Length: 266
Image (cartoon, rainbow, N blue to C red):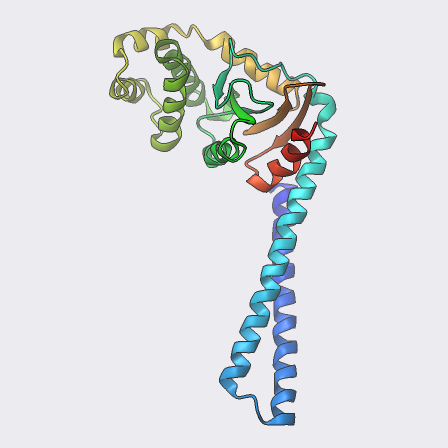
């Protein structure tokens, strides 16, 4: 269990406990009100108690989400030293989703076998869409040893797709890998054929492992920049004084907003 999970469990427990206290207080208040005035019926009292509990729980949930976002942003600030090792974004070698000339890049080190990466895939698209040209998304490989051989095989497959179909087909293939999960040579070749690409050419590329050195290089570079799990995400300011911030894990949009929004004003 991670420290973030422990914090989440503790916060949920605190909300439940506080809700019970509030519930008891409201019941006590309601009973006294009813006894004193005789004007508040059981149905009205129950409604007031339910509404009070709901408001309190919503408030605590909002406070919890805000605290998580602030903690993640603070943790990201502490990683800036290692993040300076992050290789610069390169249109010539990187897979880029969105505006190539965006002011800010979301650089993701990812593993096609990682369930957290699968969860984050939609969030990354949401970030690019929200910032409408100001933020793009870079996909780099970080296949975990515990997920091999499937993770590296899928990474190789994605590079072979990019070789044949370009950037658009690469991103189409990432959706297929995360949504449908083909993870052996037969299933991967069938998926590529369905995309309208040359199956024989793809199979030859895949079996040659010609992109293995690129994948291993990206894995090493990610580790040198502070990545120790997937998804390992960086927010990179591409203009002016280059700056990179590591945001580990499948964090939600609010966490990224806290890092991105100040950079957009620089």
